[in-house]
Image (cartoon, helix red, strand yellow):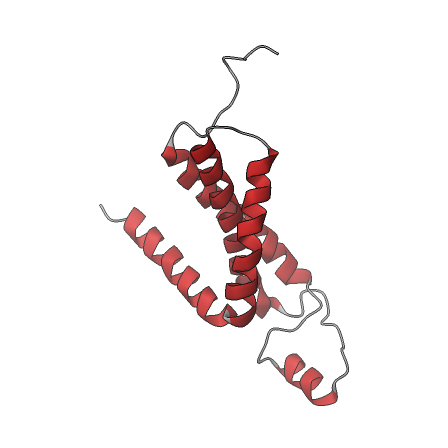
Amino acid sequence: MTEDKYEYVSYKAPKTIVAETVYHFFRGGLYGAAFGMVTPFYEAGTKGAMQEAKTGIFKPAPVFGSLSSVPSNALIFGSLLAVQRFACKSTEFLRGKQDPWNDIAGCFVAYPYYQTCLTKHAVLHNRVVGGILLASIAFANIP
């Protein structure tokens, strides 16, 4: 097998790791926002969620009926995808190789992140990620 000198390799520049992470954060945010618009689950603390907790009967939210869950789902999906890609590209940079094992390593990092940050501490997580996002937008616009 011959080496292709035009093969795309992203592990040669650490800036690419950051670029991939930011890109996938926004991409995951779009997926999460789309899911948040059609999710059958009410956002915690809303009237529908309280009624479900009292009765114990699951009654799905109508499509576009729980728009308050859009930002929360966008932050969760975006940060989960960003963590996976950051771990994947960091592994790729450290190994000096681009192959499927890097993606698997990224998944092994993303799963504990999901279990720890997004199930037990979701509210705190979303506040921190939202704050970082707002700070980065403000920093990018400083002349």
